[in-house]
Structures are given as structure tokens and as C-alpha cells.
Image (cartoon, rainbow, N blue to C red; front, top):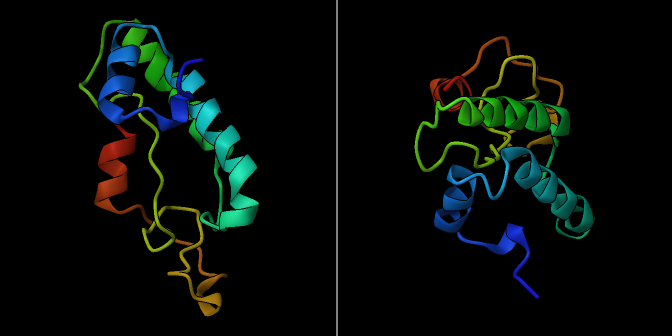
Length: 116
């Protein structure tokens, strides 16, 4: 039996995505499924943006299939700590007192990752 995709190293995932053997949507869905199975026990995610993840994966898949492959991290899902400012999302910095704070802007690191 082959290793579950969520446990493969990024360089293998990247090659699979580049060659079309794995789609960004399949990878994102596998990651979200793994998170759903494990996070109640681990508590690693304050907020899970599954809809955003799948929409981003679909956009990456379209770009890659259209010949616009941007490099080895294209199509690889990422997660952001709750201290990264994201427009329209809460920033808690793991502090309950910050739970209500919704950001009006998006920081450069997330902007550059999500717009390319």
C-alpha cells in the first residue's frame, strides 16, 4: 500500500503536481480530511478556511493545467498561524482577548503567496 499523500515530502508532492499525477485540489482535500480527522485531538487550528483552501487549489490547478506552472511550491497547501494578519479574518495570536479582532488588511507574506 502506498504512503498517504499527506505524509509525502513536499519535493515528491511537487513532482506529482507538476506532472499531473496529483492535482492541487486532490492534495488540498486530502489535507483537509486529515485535519478533520486529527484536529479535535491536536487542536492545531484556531480557524480552518476549507472553502478558501479548495478555491485556491482549484485556481492553482487551472493555472498549472493551462501551462502556467510557477515552481515547486505551486499547488502545495499552506497554513498560517493566527498571528498573521489576513483581511476579513480574526487575528488572535492565541490570546482569547484578541478573538474578536478582524483585520482590514492582508500582510505581504500571505498576499504574495496567495496571489501568485
